[in-house]
Image (tube, rainbow, N blue to C red; front, side):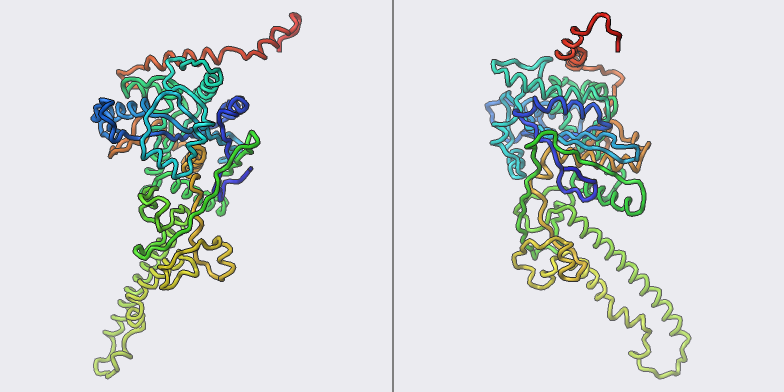
Length: 523
Protein backbone atom coordinates (compact mmCIF):
# COMPACT_ATOMS: atom_id res chain seq x y z
CA UNK A 1 0.00 0.00 0.00
CA UNK A 2 1.48 3.31 -1.04
CA UNK A 3 0.37 6.41 0.79
CA UNK A 4 1.13 10.08 1.31
CA UNK A 5 2.10 11.40 4.68
CA UNK A 6 -1.01 13.28 5.83
CA UNK A 7 -3.57 11.28 7.73
CA UNK A 8 -1.54 8.10 8.10
CA UNK A 9 -3.19 5.98 10.77
CA UNK A 10 -1.47 2.70 9.99
CA UNK A 11 1.71 1.85 8.18
CA UNK A 12 2.35 -0.99 5.77
CA UNK A 13 5.26 -3.07 6.94
CA UNK A 14 7.06 -6.23 6.00
CA UNK A 15 6.50 -8.87 8.66
CA UNK A 16 9.83 -10.69 8.82
CA UNK A 17 9.82 -14.12 10.49
CA UNK A 18 11.89 -17.27 10.40
CA UNK A 19 9.91 -18.41 7.35
CA UNK A 20 10.79 -15.49 5.08
CA UNK A 21 13.93 -13.77 6.38
CA UNK A 22 16.14 -15.63 3.92
CA UNK A 23 13.96 -14.57 1.00
CA UNK A 24 13.81 -10.93 2.14
CA UNK A 25 17.39 -10.50 3.36
CA UNK A 26 18.83 -9.12 0.08
CA UNK A 27 15.99 -6.63 -0.32
CA UNK A 28 16.35 -5.50 3.30
CA UNK A 29 20.07 -5.02 2.79
CA UNK A 30 19.42 -2.99 -0.36
CA UNK A 31 16.94 -0.68 1.38
CA UNK A 32 19.32 -0.09 4.28
CA UNK A 33 22.12 0.77 1.86
CA UNK A 34 19.91 3.37 0.11
CA UNK A 35 18.66 4.97 3.33
CA UNK A 36 19.26 8.62 4.13
CA UNK A 37 18.53 7.79 7.75
CA UNK A 38 17.23 4.79 9.68
CA UNK A 39 14.86 4.67 12.64
CA UNK A 40 14.50 1.73 15.01
CA UNK A 41 12.40 0.52 17.91
CA UNK A 42 12.45 -2.70 19.89
CA UNK A 43 10.25 -4.66 22.26
CA UNK A 44 11.80 -6.81 24.98
CA UNK A 45 10.96 -8.99 27.96
CA UNK A 46 11.97 -6.59 30.71
CA UNK A 47 12.81 -3.01 31.68
CA UNK A 48 13.45 -3.70 35.33
CA UNK A 49 14.09 -6.56 37.69
CA UNK A 50 11.17 -6.98 40.07
CA UNK A 51 10.64 -9.52 42.85
CA UNK A 52 13.42 -11.81 41.65
CA UNK A 53 13.65 -15.15 43.38
CA UNK A 54 16.34 -15.41 46.03
CA UNK A 55 17.62 -18.53 44.33
CA UNK A 56 19.31 -16.28 41.75
CA UNK A 57 21.36 -14.61 44.47
CA UNK A 58 21.16 -11.21 42.77
CA UNK A 59 22.29 -7.98 44.36
CA UNK A 60 19.22 -5.88 43.51
CA UNK A 61 21.15 -2.67 44.22
CA UNK A 62 22.99 -3.30 40.93
CA UNK A 63 19.73 -3.52 38.94
CA UNK A 64 18.27 -0.04 39.47
CA UNK A 65 17.81 1.20 35.91
CA UNK A 66 16.53 4.62 37.01
CA UNK A 67 19.68 5.43 38.97
CA UNK A 68 20.91 8.99 38.52
CA UNK A 69 24.59 8.04 38.50
CA UNK A 70 25.40 7.02 34.91
CA UNK A 71 27.82 4.27 35.85
CA UNK A 72 25.21 2.66 38.11
CA UNK A 73 22.48 3.15 35.50
CA UNK A 74 24.54 1.56 32.73
CA UNK A 75 25.50 -1.40 34.90
CA UNK A 76 21.84 -2.00 35.77
CA UNK A 77 20.72 -1.69 32.14
CA UNK A 78 23.48 -4.05 31.03
CA UNK A 79 22.39 -6.58 33.65
CA UNK A 80 18.82 -6.39 32.34
CA UNK A 81 19.82 -6.79 28.69
CA UNK A 82 22.11 -9.73 29.47
CA UNK A 83 19.39 -11.63 31.32
CA UNK A 84 16.32 -10.69 29.25
CA UNK A 85 15.70 -10.77 25.51
CA UNK A 86 14.40 -8.92 22.47
CA UNK A 87 11.11 -10.18 21.10
CA UNK A 88 10.77 -7.82 18.11
CA UNK A 89 12.67 -5.12 16.26
CA UNK A 90 11.15 -2.42 14.10
CA UNK A 91 13.20 -0.86 11.31
CA UNK A 92 12.23 2.00 8.99
CA UNK A 93 14.44 3.15 6.14
CA UNK A 94 13.92 6.67 4.77
CA UNK A 95 15.50 7.10 1.33
CA UNK A 96 15.42 10.15 -0.93
CA UNK A 97 12.45 10.14 -3.26
CA UNK A 98 13.39 13.23 -5.30
CA UNK A 99 15.16 16.52 -4.76
CA UNK A 100 12.27 18.34 -3.08
CA UNK A 101 13.00 18.79 0.65
CA UNK A 102 11.14 16.35 2.87
CA UNK A 103 10.43 13.81 0.14
CA UNK A 104 11.16 10.20 1.13
CA UNK A 105 10.40 6.63 0.20
CA UNK A 106 9.81 4.60 3.35
CA UNK A 107 10.18 0.87 3.90
CA UNK A 108 9.09 -0.58 7.24
CA UNK A 109 10.12 -3.94 8.65
CA UNK A 110 8.98 -5.79 11.74
CA UNK A 111 11.33 -8.58 12.81
CA UNK A 112 9.73 -11.17 15.09
CA UNK A 113 12.50 -12.54 17.31
CA UNK A 114 13.02 -15.50 19.62
CA UNK A 115 16.20 -15.64 21.69
CA UNK A 116 17.55 -19.15 22.16
CA UNK A 117 19.38 -18.31 25.39
CA UNK A 118 17.50 -19.02 28.60
CA UNK A 119 16.28 -15.61 29.78
CA UNK A 120 14.07 -13.82 32.27
CA UNK A 121 10.61 -12.45 31.55
CA UNK A 122 9.18 -9.56 33.51
CA UNK A 123 5.46 -10.22 34.00
CA UNK A 124 4.57 -6.54 33.66
CA UNK A 125 6.42 -6.21 30.36
CA UNK A 126 4.97 -9.37 28.86
CA UNK A 127 1.44 -8.42 30.00
CA UNK A 128 1.89 -5.01 28.39
CA UNK A 129 2.91 -6.64 25.12
CA UNK A 130 0.03 -9.11 25.20
CA UNK A 131 -2.52 -6.41 25.99
CA UNK A 132 -1.27 -4.42 23.01
CA UNK A 133 -1.71 -7.26 20.57
CA UNK A 134 1.67 -8.99 20.64
CA UNK A 135 1.12 -12.66 19.78
CA UNK A 136 3.31 -14.70 22.11
CA UNK A 137 2.25 -17.96 20.49
CA UNK A 138 3.28 -16.71 17.07
CA UNK A 139 6.60 -15.52 18.47
CA UNK A 140 7.26 -19.04 19.74
CA UNK A 141 6.56 -20.66 16.36
CA UNK A 142 7.59 -17.95 13.88
CA UNK A 143 10.20 -15.87 15.73
CA UNK A 144 13.65 -15.57 14.15
CA UNK A 145 15.91 -17.66 16.36
CA UNK A 146 19.17 -16.11 17.52
CA UNK A 147 21.70 -16.38 20.34
CA UNK A 148 22.29 -13.19 22.30
CA UNK A 149 25.80 -11.99 23.14
CA UNK A 150 27.86 -13.40 20.23
CA UNK A 151 31.52 -13.37 21.22
CA UNK A 152 32.38 -12.56 18.47
CA UNK A 153 30.70 -15.42 16.64
CA UNK A 154 27.28 -16.60 17.83
CA UNK A 155 26.76 -20.02 19.34
CA UNK A 156 26.50 -22.80 16.75
CA UNK A 157 23.98 -25.57 17.33
CA UNK A 158 23.17 -28.79 15.54
CA UNK A 159 20.14 -27.31 13.80
CA UNK A 160 21.32 -25.58 10.58
CA UNK A 161 18.12 -23.52 10.28
CA UNK A 162 18.70 -21.89 13.68
CA UNK A 163 22.29 -21.06 12.79
CA UNK A 164 21.22 -19.51 9.48
CA UNK A 165 18.46 -17.41 11.06
CA UNK A 166 20.90 -16.08 13.63
CA UNK A 167 23.43 -15.11 10.97
CA UNK A 168 20.80 -13.40 8.83
CA UNK A 169 19.34 -11.24 11.59
CA UNK A 170 22.80 -10.32 12.79
CA UNK A 171 23.70 -9.33 9.24
CA UNK A 172 20.74 -6.94 9.22
CA UNK A 173 22.24 -5.15 12.22
CA UNK A 174 25.67 -5.18 10.58
CA UNK A 175 24.11 -3.54 7.50
CA UNK A 176 22.73 -0.76 9.71
CA UNK A 177 26.21 -0.20 11.12
CA UNK A 178 27.82 -0.29 7.68
CA UNK A 179 25.35 2.26 6.30
CA UNK A 180 26.97 5.03 8.34
CA UNK A 181 23.80 7.17 8.24
CA UNK A 182 21.97 8.79 11.18
CA UNK A 183 20.29 6.29 13.49
CA UNK A 184 17.07 7.64 15.00
CA UNK A 185 15.48 6.51 18.28
CA UNK A 186 12.83 7.82 20.66
CA UNK A 187 13.85 7.57 24.31
CA UNK A 188 15.90 4.69 23.02
CA UNK A 189 18.86 4.09 25.31
CA UNK A 190 17.49 0.70 26.29
CA UNK A 191 16.98 -0.12 22.59
CA UNK A 192 20.67 0.56 21.97
CA UNK A 193 21.74 -1.55 24.95
CA UNK A 194 19.57 -4.49 23.90
CA UNK A 195 20.62 -4.30 20.24
CA UNK A 196 24.31 -4.24 21.15
CA UNK A 197 23.99 -7.25 23.45
CA UNK A 198 21.74 -9.21 21.08
CA UNK A 199 23.50 -8.78 17.74
CA UNK A 200 26.87 -7.10 18.21
CA UNK A 201 28.49 -8.75 21.20
CA UNK A 202 28.79 -8.81 24.99
CA UNK A 203 28.23 -5.35 26.44
CA UNK A 204 31.36 -3.53 27.61
CA UNK A 205 32.04 -3.35 31.32
CA UNK A 206 31.89 0.44 31.47
CA UNK A 207 29.50 2.97 30.02
CA UNK A 208 32.48 5.04 28.81
CA UNK A 209 33.50 2.19 26.48
CA UNK A 210 29.87 1.61 25.50
CA UNK A 211 29.33 5.20 24.31
CA UNK A 212 32.76 5.20 22.65
CA UNK A 213 31.73 2.08 20.73
CA UNK A 214 28.42 3.67 19.68
CA UNK A 215 30.16 6.80 18.43
CA UNK A 216 32.37 4.63 16.22
CA UNK A 217 29.59 2.30 15.10
CA UNK A 218 27.30 5.12 13.94
CA UNK A 219 29.39 7.91 12.40
CA UNK A 220 26.23 9.53 11.02
CA UNK A 221 25.18 10.17 14.60
CA UNK A 222 22.44 8.95 16.92
CA UNK A 223 19.41 11.22 17.22
CA UNK A 224 16.82 10.86 19.98
CA UNK A 225 13.53 12.45 18.97
CA UNK A 226 12.47 12.77 22.61
CA UNK A 227 15.43 15.10 23.21
CA UNK A 228 14.52 17.09 20.10
CA UNK A 229 10.84 17.32 21.09
CA UNK A 230 11.55 18.46 24.65
CA UNK A 231 13.74 21.29 23.36
CA UNK A 232 11.79 22.34 20.27
CA UNK A 233 8.26 21.79 21.62
CA UNK A 234 8.58 22.60 25.34
CA UNK A 235 5.53 22.47 27.55
CA UNK A 236 3.84 19.65 25.65
CA UNK A 237 3.74 15.91 26.08
CA UNK A 238 6.65 14.24 24.30
CA UNK A 239 5.71 10.58 24.23
CA UNK A 240 5.94 8.94 20.84
CA UNK A 241 2.34 8.76 19.59
CA UNK A 242 1.55 12.30 20.78
CA UNK A 243 4.57 13.81 19.03
CA UNK A 244 3.89 11.84 15.87
CA UNK A 245 0.35 13.13 15.51
CA UNK A 246 1.42 16.63 16.53
CA UNK A 247 4.08 16.63 13.80
CA UNK A 248 1.55 15.21 11.36
CA UNK A 249 -0.75 18.17 12.01
CA UNK A 250 2.12 20.64 11.74
CA UNK A 251 3.04 19.20 8.33
CA UNK A 252 -0.56 19.50 7.17
CA UNK A 253 -0.58 23.19 8.13
CA UNK A 254 2.70 23.73 6.28
CA UNK A 255 1.20 22.12 3.20
CA UNK A 256 -1.93 24.29 3.41
CA UNK A 257 0.24 27.42 3.69
CA UNK A 258 2.28 26.39 0.66
CA UNK A 259 5.43 25.79 2.70
CA UNK A 260 7.76 22.81 2.22
CA UNK A 261 6.16 19.79 3.89
CA UNK A 262 6.90 16.10 4.26
CA UNK A 263 5.90 13.93 1.33
CA UNK A 264 6.34 10.29 2.28
CA UNK A 265 5.51 7.30 0.17
CA UNK A 266 5.10 4.11 2.14
CA UNK A 267 6.35 1.48 -0.25
CA UNK A 268 4.51 -1.71 -1.05
CA UNK A 269 5.41 -4.81 0.90
CA UNK A 270 8.36 -6.69 -0.54
CA UNK A 271 6.64 -10.02 -0.13
CA UNK A 272 3.04 -11.09 -0.51
CA UNK A 273 1.58 -12.09 2.81
CA UNK A 274 3.18 -9.28 4.77
CA UNK A 275 0.80 -7.94 7.34
CA UNK A 276 -0.60 -4.66 8.54
CA UNK A 277 -1.75 -3.96 12.08
CA UNK A 278 -5.13 -5.56 12.69
CA UNK A 279 -7.87 -3.08 13.46
CA UNK A 280 -9.62 -3.67 16.75
CA UNK A 281 -11.94 -1.14 18.31
CA UNK A 282 -13.14 -0.72 21.85
CA UNK A 283 -16.50 0.52 23.00
CA UNK A 284 -16.00 3.61 25.10
CA UNK A 285 -18.01 4.35 28.19
CA UNK A 286 -18.62 7.87 29.40
CA UNK A 287 -17.33 8.77 32.84
CA UNK A 288 -19.19 11.47 34.72
CA UNK A 289 -16.33 11.81 37.20
CA UNK A 290 -14.13 13.60 34.68
CA UNK A 291 -14.97 16.90 32.98
CA UNK A 292 -13.00 15.86 29.90
CA UNK A 293 -13.86 13.13 27.38
CA UNK A 294 -10.23 12.05 27.00
CA UNK A 295 -7.87 10.43 29.46
CA UNK A 296 -5.67 13.16 30.95
CA UNK A 297 -3.18 10.60 32.26
CA UNK A 298 -2.74 9.21 28.75
CA UNK A 299 -2.58 12.71 27.26
CA UNK A 300 0.31 13.63 29.54
CA UNK A 301 2.33 10.42 29.61
CA UNK A 302 1.18 8.10 26.83
CA UNK A 303 0.01 5.39 29.20
CA UNK A 304 -2.81 4.79 31.63
CA UNK A 305 -2.97 2.33 34.50
CA UNK A 306 -6.48 1.26 33.45
CA UNK A 307 -5.35 0.35 29.93
CA UNK A 308 -8.21 -0.69 27.69
CA UNK A 309 -10.58 -0.59 30.68
CA UNK A 310 -10.26 3.20 30.87
CA UNK A 311 -13.54 5.05 30.46
CA UNK A 312 -12.04 7.90 28.49
CA UNK A 313 -10.52 8.12 25.03
CA UNK A 314 -6.87 7.28 24.38
CA UNK A 315 -7.06 8.38 20.76
CA UNK A 316 -4.22 10.87 20.30
CA UNK A 317 -5.81 12.73 17.39
CA UNK A 318 -9.00 13.17 19.40
CA UNK A 319 -6.95 14.41 22.38
CA UNK A 320 -5.21 16.95 20.16
CA UNK A 321 -8.56 18.10 18.72
CA UNK A 322 -9.90 18.67 22.22
CA UNK A 323 -6.75 20.44 23.40
CA UNK A 324 -6.83 22.78 20.40
CA UNK A 325 -10.45 23.68 21.16
CA UNK A 326 -9.62 24.16 24.83
CA UNK A 327 -6.80 26.53 23.88
CA UNK A 328 -9.08 28.42 21.49
CA UNK A 329 -11.76 28.70 24.19
CA UNK A 330 -9.21 30.02 26.66
CA UNK A 331 -8.06 32.65 24.18
CA UNK A 332 -11.66 33.64 23.50
CA UNK A 333 -12.33 33.95 27.21
CA UNK A 334 -9.30 36.21 27.65
CA UNK A 335 -10.53 38.32 24.74
CA UNK A 336 -13.99 38.68 26.27
CA UNK A 337 -12.50 39.68 29.62
CA UNK A 338 -10.27 42.26 27.91
CA UNK A 339 -13.25 43.70 26.04
CA UNK A 340 -15.24 43.87 29.26
CA UNK A 341 -12.43 45.67 31.09
CA UNK A 342 -12.13 48.20 28.27
CA UNK A 343 -15.88 48.72 28.21
CA UNK A 344 -15.95 49.21 31.99
CA UNK A 345 -13.29 51.92 31.80
CA UNK A 346 -15.15 53.69 29.03
CA UNK A 347 -18.42 53.50 30.93
CA UNK A 348 -16.78 54.91 34.03
CA UNK A 349 -15.59 57.95 32.12
CA UNK A 350 -19.05 58.56 30.74
CA UNK A 351 -20.65 58.20 34.15
CA UNK A 352 -18.41 60.88 35.64
CA UNK A 353 -19.57 63.30 32.97
CA UNK A 354 -23.25 62.78 33.77
CA UNK A 355 -25.33 65.47 35.42
CA UNK A 356 -25.45 64.59 39.11
CA UNK A 357 -28.97 66.00 39.33
CA UNK A 358 -30.36 63.57 36.77
CA UNK A 359 -32.73 61.16 38.41
CA UNK A 360 -32.42 58.11 36.23
CA UNK A 361 -33.33 54.58 37.15
CA UNK A 362 -30.16 52.75 38.13
CA UNK A 363 -30.97 49.74 36.09
CA UNK A 364 -31.57 51.87 33.03
CA UNK A 365 -28.48 53.99 33.52
CA UNK A 366 -26.06 51.09 33.70
CA UNK A 367 -23.87 51.15 30.63
CA UNK A 368 -24.45 48.39 28.05
CA UNK A 369 -21.08 46.86 28.88
CA UNK A 370 -22.17 46.54 32.51
CA UNK A 371 -25.25 44.68 31.44
CA UNK A 372 -23.10 42.47 29.25
CA UNK A 373 -20.84 41.74 32.17
CA UNK A 374 -23.79 40.93 34.41
CA UNK A 375 -25.18 38.61 31.83
CA UNK A 376 -21.91 37.04 30.80
CA UNK A 377 -19.52 37.41 33.71
CA UNK A 378 -19.83 33.86 34.99
CA UNK A 379 -22.10 32.88 32.17
CA UNK A 380 -19.54 33.55 29.46
CA UNK A 381 -16.91 31.52 31.26
CA UNK A 382 -19.35 28.72 31.77
CA UNK A 383 -20.67 28.98 28.25
CA UNK A 384 -17.21 29.01 26.76
CA UNK A 385 -16.14 26.05 28.85
CA UNK A 386 -19.40 24.23 28.12
CA UNK A 387 -19.13 24.91 24.41
CA UNK A 388 -15.54 23.73 24.29
CA UNK A 389 -16.43 20.56 26.11
CA UNK A 390 -19.61 20.00 24.13
CA UNK A 391 -17.61 20.24 20.93
CA UNK A 392 -15.47 17.34 22.13
CA UNK A 393 -18.45 15.16 23.03
CA UNK A 394 -20.57 13.09 20.66
CA UNK A 395 -23.40 15.11 19.17
CA UNK A 396 -26.03 12.83 20.62
CA UNK A 397 -24.39 12.91 24.07
CA UNK A 398 -24.32 16.68 24.69
CA UNK A 399 -27.04 16.32 27.30
CA UNK A 400 -27.33 15.40 30.95
CA UNK A 401 -27.64 11.74 30.01
CA UNK A 402 -23.87 11.39 29.64
CA UNK A 403 -23.77 8.65 32.23
CA UNK A 404 -25.28 6.21 29.76
CA UNK A 405 -22.95 3.85 27.86
CA UNK A 406 -21.36 5.61 24.92
CA UNK A 407 -21.60 3.64 21.70
CA UNK A 408 -19.02 4.27 19.03
CA UNK A 409 -20.30 7.08 16.77
CA UNK A 410 -19.73 7.44 13.03
CA UNK A 411 -16.56 9.16 11.83
CA UNK A 412 -16.39 12.89 12.42
CA UNK A 413 -16.89 13.74 8.74
CA UNK A 414 -20.08 11.68 8.47
CA UNK A 415 -21.41 13.07 11.75
CA UNK A 416 -20.86 16.62 10.54
CA UNK A 417 -22.87 16.03 7.41
CA UNK A 418 -25.64 14.19 9.20
CA UNK A 419 -26.08 16.63 12.03
CA UNK A 420 -25.11 19.88 10.35
CA UNK A 421 -22.71 20.44 13.22
CA UNK A 422 -18.99 21.10 13.39
CA UNK A 423 -18.71 19.24 16.69
CA UNK A 424 -16.00 16.69 17.34
CA UNK A 425 -17.03 13.11 17.83
CA UNK A 426 -15.32 10.58 20.05
CA UNK A 427 -13.65 8.34 17.45
CA UNK A 428 -12.99 4.67 17.32
CA UNK A 429 -9.96 3.88 19.44
CA UNK A 430 -6.74 3.29 17.50
CA UNK A 431 -5.86 -0.33 16.83
CA UNK A 432 -4.66 -1.91 20.06
CA UNK A 433 -1.55 -3.36 18.47
CA UNK A 434 -0.66 -0.34 16.36
CA UNK A 435 1.18 2.00 18.72
CA UNK A 436 3.28 -0.78 20.23
CA UNK A 437 4.12 -2.67 17.07
CA UNK A 438 7.87 -2.17 16.80
CA UNK A 439 7.63 -1.39 13.07
CA UNK A 440 4.97 1.27 13.56
CA UNK A 441 6.86 2.82 16.46
CA UNK A 442 9.99 2.90 14.31
CA UNK A 443 8.04 4.60 11.54
CA UNK A 444 6.59 7.22 13.90
CA UNK A 445 10.09 7.88 15.24
CA UNK A 446 11.41 8.45 11.73
CA UNK A 447 8.47 10.67 10.85
CA UNK A 448 9.11 12.91 13.86
CA UNK A 449 12.79 13.16 12.93
CA UNK A 450 11.98 14.01 9.32
CA UNK A 451 9.50 16.68 10.46
CA UNK A 452 12.01 18.44 12.69
CA UNK A 453 14.78 18.00 10.14
CA UNK A 454 12.71 19.83 7.53
CA UNK A 455 12.14 22.76 9.88
CA UNK A 456 15.48 22.93 11.69
CA UNK A 457 17.78 22.07 8.78
CA UNK A 458 21.37 22.66 9.91
CA UNK A 459 20.29 23.17 13.53
CA UNK A 460 19.60 19.43 13.74
CA UNK A 461 23.31 18.97 14.37
CA UNK A 462 22.69 20.41 17.84
CA UNK A 463 20.98 17.14 18.74
CA UNK A 464 23.50 14.73 17.27
CA UNK A 465 24.63 12.03 19.71
CA UNK A 466 22.42 13.14 22.59
CA UNK A 467 20.27 10.42 24.14
CA UNK A 468 17.45 10.96 26.63
CA UNK A 469 18.01 9.67 30.17
CA UNK A 470 15.16 8.60 32.42
CA UNK A 471 15.31 8.82 36.18
CA UNK A 472 15.37 12.56 36.73
CA UNK A 473 18.54 13.45 34.85
CA UNK A 474 18.40 16.94 33.37
CA UNK A 475 21.28 16.33 30.94
CA UNK A 476 21.30 13.87 28.04
CA UNK A 477 23.81 11.09 27.61
CA UNK A 478 26.48 12.26 25.18
CA UNK A 479 27.58 9.63 22.70
CA UNK A 480 31.21 10.53 22.23
CA UNK A 481 34.73 9.33 22.86
CA UNK A 482 35.91 10.17 26.35
CA UNK A 483 39.44 11.48 26.95
CA UNK A 484 40.42 8.43 29.01
CA UNK A 485 38.23 5.79 27.35
CA UNK A 486 38.82 3.39 24.51
CA UNK A 487 36.72 1.13 22.37
CA UNK A 488 35.94 -2.22 23.94
CA UNK A 489 37.37 -5.60 23.06
CA UNK A 490 33.91 -6.55 21.78
CA UNK A 491 33.91 -3.63 19.35
CA UNK A 492 37.36 -4.38 17.96
CA UNK A 493 36.68 -8.10 17.50
CA UNK A 494 33.21 -7.68 16.01
CA UNK A 495 34.16 -4.88 13.62
CA UNK A 496 37.05 -7.01 12.35
CA UNK A 497 34.63 -9.88 11.77
CA UNK A 498 32.03 -7.59 10.16
CA UNK A 499 34.51 -5.99 7.77
CA UNK A 500 35.96 -9.37 6.80
CA UNK A 501 32.49 -10.68 5.98
CA UNK A 502 31.71 -7.57 3.90
CA UNK A 503 34.95 -7.96 1.91
CA UNK A 504 34.21 -11.57 0.93
CA UNK A 505 32.52 -11.79 -2.51
CA UNK A 506 29.31 -13.71 -2.75
CA UNK A 507 29.47 -17.18 -4.28
CA UNK A 508 27.71 -16.26 -7.59
CA UNK A 509 29.97 -13.22 -8.05
CA UNK A 510 33.09 -15.34 -7.45
CA UNK A 511 31.90 -17.97 -9.94
CA UNK A 512 31.21 -15.29 -12.54
CA UNK A 513 34.68 -13.82 -12.05
CA UNK A 514 36.29 -17.22 -12.59
CA UNK A 515 34.31 -17.77 -15.80
CA UNK A 516 35.40 -14.41 -17.30
CA UNK A 517 37.76 -14.94 -20.30
CA UNK A 518 41.34 -13.97 -19.67
CA UNK A 519 41.42 -11.64 -22.66
CA UNK A 520 38.25 -9.81 -21.66
CA UNK A 521 38.64 -6.10 -21.11
CA UNK A 522 38.10 -4.94 -17.55
CA UNK A 523 34.76 -3.35 -16.85
